[in-house]
Image (cartoon, rainbow, N blue to C red; front, side, top):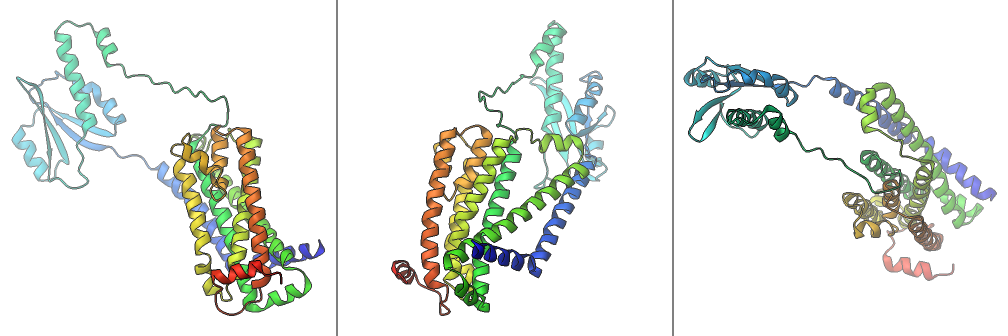
Length: 408
């Protein structure tokens, strides 16, 4: 046990002393702080209204369009009602760019006619359909009123459908989908990034020959477990610091209304937080042990990336399998992703927050993940023990199999 603590302590000190670790942490924290300030600045900018001129020189609406000004502003348009400009004068103003665009209203035997004037159609040109729909509705009401339909019945006809969403889930965990996806991304980042550091640390120590000292003082099994735990502790602390800074920035920089609507976290119960922590630890352990295996098969830092390729592909497949099934969390594929070891650390916490996973489902997922970790740990430690002092070329798959079968 003393040897294990020695390796853990050595790993932690070695990581936090690295200049790259310190610089990357500073950069990440600055990005978080700047990001929240940018979001606050964008939200504080007043939304500019699109200017549109509506010409009713036939006085079809008898001044009723003026009553729609507030409605137009809510739709994002600043509408100017013009009753004097002729069609020719209006076209000249649009061509000379005195006006951005204009809607000319006229009436014929088929009803109301719209003519939208704009100086050249480009990719970003959009027709103000909301304004046209509002004008069309007003025109229809005028015609119905002329037929003698009372105003209260017109209001009933124009009432928008009121849709009430009723959740049939009795679990209070079904909360903000935005928070759930953010947590899933944070989980993937933390698990993948820190697990990746295990292979890098092992390869660097092989290059500097520090590993020879470690092997003579303790067993390879202790080295693998010590490095996995040490880097995991650093990862947990770094992730907690990042989350703490993000929460402080959110509460001190963002407006209260935005914070309450987007970052609503009342559904994160202690049970959900415990599930997230469990899957973080198990997911990190699985990928860290896989990366310990790949790190021991190379002897140069520049070979680490290519050696880690297969594990990286597994991690990406696992993440996207869980992430894309979030769009349809009740699908059979999502249930499978919650049980498959490479994706369950990213998928099952999401299902738990949605209230879609039973206690038995979570237990089964954890058991499968633990059994997979024990199997991977056995294989990794066995191969690591035989490959750790290899300073030649990258070990082939066949040689890995021979190393696993070897008793030395």
